[in-house]
Image (cartoon, rainbow, N blue to C red; front, side, top):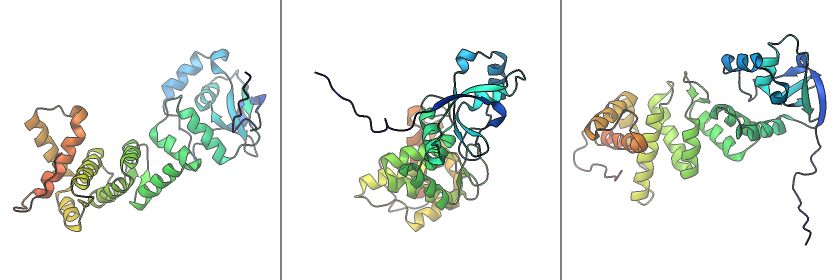
Amino acid sequence: MNKQFIYANSNNPKGTFKWLDKKALKIPEDKYQRPASSQKKIANIASNWDWMLAETLTVTPNGSGYNVVNGGHRLRAANLIPTIKKLPCMVFSDGNDTRDATAFVGQCKRTNVTPYHKHRAMVKANDPVAVEIDAMITDAGYAPSDRTQDSGFKAITALYRFYEIDKEEAQESLSVCAEVMHPDPIRLNLLKGVFWAGLRHKQQNNGKTLWTDGNIEKLVCEGAVGHLREVNRLRMKSGLSAEGGDHAHLIYARAIINLLNKGRGPGKIKVAI
């Protein structure tokens, strides 16, 4: 029996193959593309240039030339070779910022793209989860970043994971960490500790939040330094390595509970971590 398969996007306009002047090609790094992260890698592509391996670049018109959606490193390598004047390209004339970004997200599944640049592309492509996470980071007084710097938030992969587990707890954890750290960068071990301590408390106390004003104030007083000191104490006590292996997040969470119980006396917070 013959079956007819219908693909939702099969009617999208097909690309057109063209040899384009490399000077007309632009990498839109200001939007979501990766910067030239490895000059050594680019130089290696250039010194071992192979037209078969280079394949075609995916581009879209930008009015004055073309934006490179896929092939940025190859373009950079070609720019190091004076004898290369034109590059083989598939031109998609109906491109726009959103569709270009969506194509870049698809490329992320096949290439080594940082979580930061994938996140930026997903926001540009109007992915609802990425847009919401981006707003969470901004509301906390930070900006997504691929490096640790003032007001830069690098723990993007962890935040996506926490969002998937418990969106409300992820948002509250980020807010608490901002109270502790701002304007300094949020430390990943602190974020993990706050999230897992808060989640375990909520699960074991009928949905009641751990993060009362008093507990937040207590953690702010102890700070990230106090948390790290307690983490190291627990590691030495348990004999775990500096990384803590698969149980590192539990150590971070236990350290949070210990800090909140410090000097509390009766009525200590009881949470099984």
